[in-house]
Length: 163
Image (tube, rainbow, N blue to C red):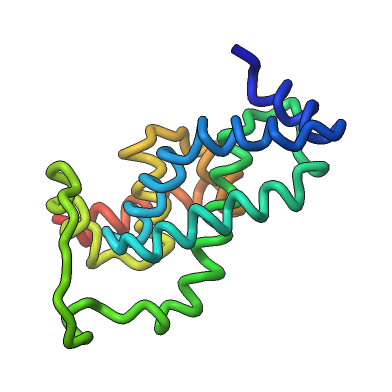
């Protein structure tokens, strides 16, 4: 199996179908990340995931092969989430719409989504990266563009809110 970095290089040299392999490899991860960032808003999570892959493709030339592709993609997903959350008003709650609704089964994750709802979006992002995806403080700082000390204090504040 080819590494992500090899697939990136092949994509950049004209084999665009190799990017599809990267998308398939990381689609579930990005969607799960989006679900956690958005506290279970499926449509919003799908948009975050799709925009992340589009933006990653657009900026693939800027990928640094010394870093992990997944971490680079996570940084893009965080930025897409921030950008799209500024436009969140387009995501009406199903309770507001007078139509029949379908609530998908998230395999027991609904408790997690309820747990993180009181957190601010930046706290939710950092909390998810730390405690769900087990990123180290320095990795989170790099992904979200903050200093390590700031990440630590945001984690501390998030934990206080959840107590």
